[in-house]
Image 1 (cartoon, rainbow, N blue to C red):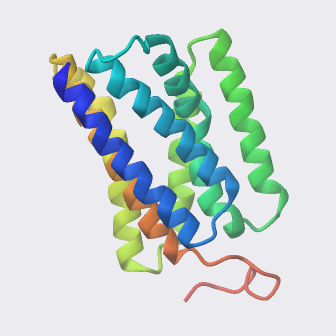
Image 2 (image 1 turned 60 degrees about the horizontal axis):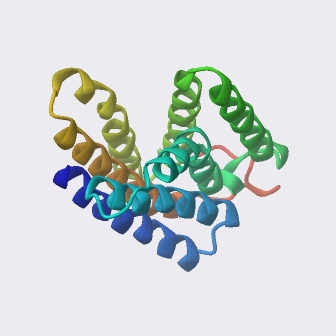
Amino acid sequence: MLIAGLSELLLIAGLSFAFVHNLKHKRSLIIAMAILTTTCAASAGFMRYLELADTVSVHQSFSFISKHFAMSAFITGLLWHSFSRPVLPWAILGLTLISFAINTLYSAGFISDAIIVLLCLYFIYQVRTQLPALVQAVTALFILTSTLIWGIIMSDKDLLLGLFHLSLACFFVLMARSSKALIPLTDDNKHAPVT
């Protein structure tokens, strides 16, 4: 599966951009850990799909963690200082862990998907006054959710995985770029109207 394997490199490049952006802007450790988890999945996928090593179980494990925890943790980390109460990001991470635990027992991926989409919508709400960031965040959500449709209309698994990896790469890059528009809430501005 050449396309699937090589497209993992695009995902690794997108994750690298988000990681460097995170370091550059002094974002939280949670973001870095989420990115590294997804990078491990992409690296194992690269070796798996190009048949360089037997990394099926490693790839599946890190992909599971990425989908059911790291993606939500990444967005929560970006939004960390945008919540009105300090306990909210911790509560979201707790909810994400509960979803992760449920998915280890049952196939309930829709819970993780819902958390990711809701976090993206809140992110979009937070950057709504900055047009470039708003366009990037909306595009990121559109690209991410479009992957649900491709599985229905495409039968070539190699190409489908390639598009999925490209979509994830774009998502991470766009979310990292648009996060510059997030304004941390302080006691002075958390109740101020947005103009």
